[in-house]
Length: 74
Image (cartoon, rainbow, N blue to C red; front, side):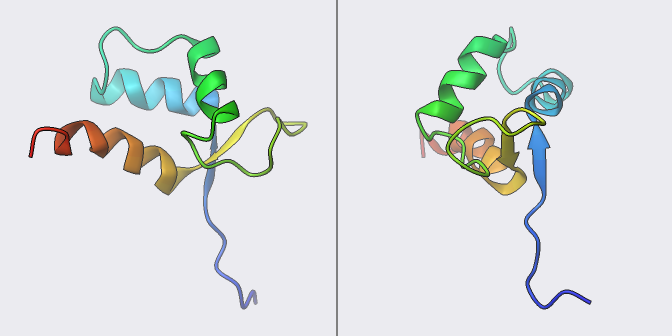
């Protein structure tokens, strides 16, 4: 059993799917834009560069970014 809690990580393809499914931004962001967001630290990622599985974004970081649009005008 693990003592340390593991933070779920999602690949950019899943981020693209979630953006489309939940209509977070319409039209959805391009893959190059998502990569730039990883490189600039907008999304918190596992490491500073793509892994052998591509960019891995912490799921909570993605949802924090998505919810930030709803909080801009409050």
